[in-house]
Image (cartoon, rainbow, N blue to C red):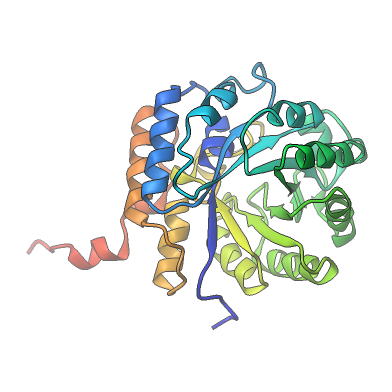
Length: 312
């Protein structure tokens, strides 16, 4: 049905994109516990840290120490995120499988998020590519606001392709198209992924899912139907740009447990145990003031309902 695959790769971004929305820093030991629990649940690709300036994101200031202590014998790929060339240079001293670099598809978001225009960020990308190559790190470029921007509106294929083309020139192994605002709809996702795969054959293409408008499950299926190589979500539905207007409970990423629950139900194998992710999310909700946004945590799974007893 809908040209869906039998398997899907899921990247959990909770320790980076998720925790950057949590104001009170979690301890290093808590983060290491989350890594261990993610691995036990079957997650094989983890965005684990950011190399943003510690003053900007104190929650993520422990990137180097975290990378020194994560398990290296479990076959897990670790990704760190760099907002700019300086962050990439800092990351080059660490043991990382992938370095992600964020470049918004249009200037409004680029200036708001990173203080530079899209072109200024692209001007640094070739040097970042050289830095990751010297460090034997795979380069993955995040096209932020790849479909819709809060400062611009719908984003054209030309604007998106401009960033993807520069990523290819810089030696990127893959790109992910980010539904940054959560206002993206399935047709945009399907057409954007399909067009990118056709224009850049051989390039890995993922989709990063936010859920402000509740469309993330449909967007996930649209992305897979168009041939996306992986999907990105966060345990507990953590995340969201703090300056976006709206109720915090709708601003985050799609919950990893919700995504896995959906794919499990449709017979799409992820290798991830939904109960393991739910346990992480319940722990994180207890440790933070983040709203309980995960549908699996709030409403349970199909299996929970099937086993429920009904009072007379």
